[in-house]
Length: 112
Image 1: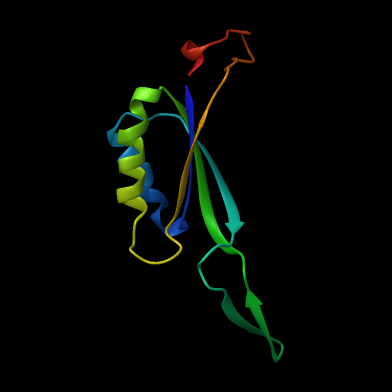
Image 2: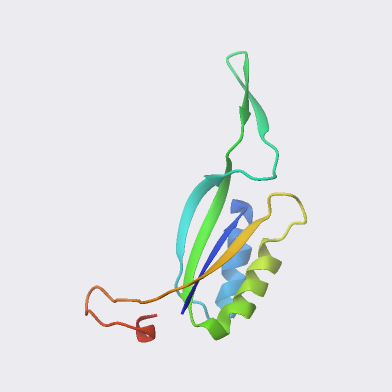
């Protein structure tokens, strides 16, 4: 089992969700997050003062899946999230040692 974490622009969420639905991906965790990287900060004005906003709003999705699905999920997210501009996001992959369904106590890949 693996966990795919993707962080990308909020305005690309619907496109990413639709691309994953076409692959039959039914479950994911979605969070609104803020982050910074190579993308430059934005300057905003408030009551006559100038502020640089360094943390940009992003969406983070987390998907637990079987390893054999990894490449097609990465490709779908990458294609749907890409604008070609700095700040399009990142995808991280990690191995999952165990999964437990809380309600039943069932363990292993069958719970995903």
